[in-house]
Image 1 (cartoon, rainbow, N blue to C red):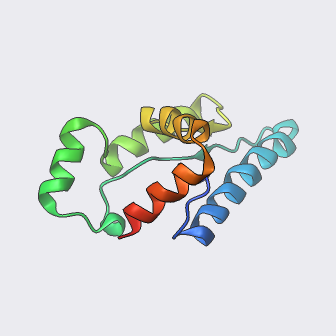
Image 2: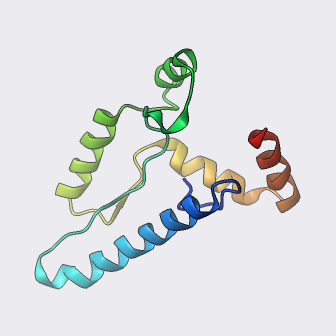
Image 3: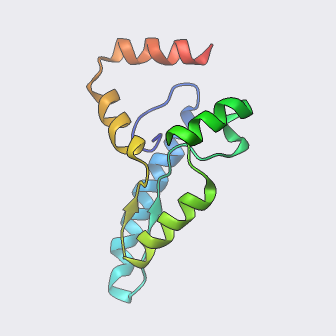
Length: 118
């Protein structure tokens, strides 16, 4: 999701993800005439130590579908790659959350990030 929306607090991470998404799409078009495919994978929350969540919260995320396992992501990424897709954002959260955040006024987004940062 940080490839689509700026994320205060993880600014450099967010910017590099936006760059990689754009770079992957451009490579896809450049290499297509040579029969080389490029699929950029934009996962949402994946159950890894990156999030530093408590096991209880992680399990709740997995049960509700807000967090997915690495195996789930790899299956979807490989399916997209074999179908020749440019970009794959396999989680519904990747679709609705950035769209929702883009509709909010800037001051509200800043207030939300400030609250989440605490």
